[in-house]
Amino acid sequence: MSLNWADIVDGTWPAARFETLGPFRLRQGLGGGSRVSAASALAPATDADVAAAEEAMRKMGQRPLFCLRPGDDGLDQQLADRGYDILDPVNIYKCPADHLTDTPIPRVTAFTIWNPLAIMNEIWAQGGIGPERLAIMDRTEGPKTGIFLRRSDHPAGTGFVAIRDSVAMVHALEILPAYRRQGLGQWAMRAAAFWAQKNGAHTLSVICTKANDGANGLYKALGMEITGEYHYRQLVQGE
Image 1 (cartoon, rainbow, N blue to C red):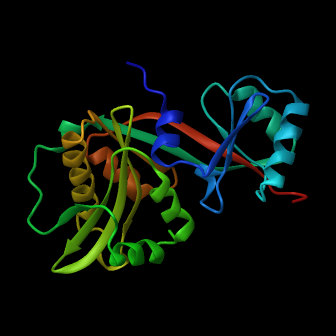
Image 2: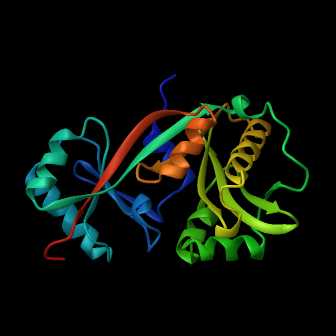
Image 3: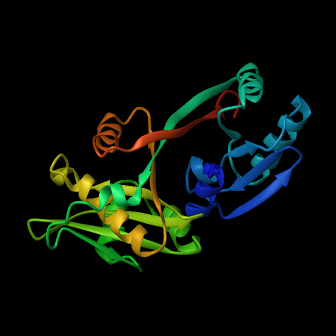
């Protein structure tokens, strides 16, 4: 079965509002970051279509931003010609959920909890994941959970997981600086896999910027494979 990764991302980390304008799907993010604010193409676009999308995004209070996926080469060139810069190329990783349920998680290391504890929100805040992104988690529909990580009896990290089309996608994984490089990332992913299985998801997935060497190394070490990629283009000059 071919998975629609755009739908999975939108379902597990949704914009506040979606709007179809000509050949574009627009997203209103309310300050929640690129993933919930970028327009994406549903069909080939003319320069007039691009201009209309730009104006609509400005009316939302957002800087013009587009998400480019494989097959969007024509739009990618159009935006480059209009002065758009590439922003945050990412990889989408996946693996069967049962690939990561072969190892028991050490006691009191990872808990799946929803609604989030106050300490989880504090950890997210320290990583720059503030109220606007917490609002994304709140409005996500369907099965979802937070992951709370502990190390040596201390709060150490947190993450968010939601399911769409039998795929559990991990978002907002944040480990406190003092507890990084101690294996907590893999326990977070394994906890997500156990939760995914219990909630009917057969696949575990995660998105990671290509520049994040540590996270890419973790997902590859866990045996996850790159199943897709995309990047953004943002209009900087004149904004």
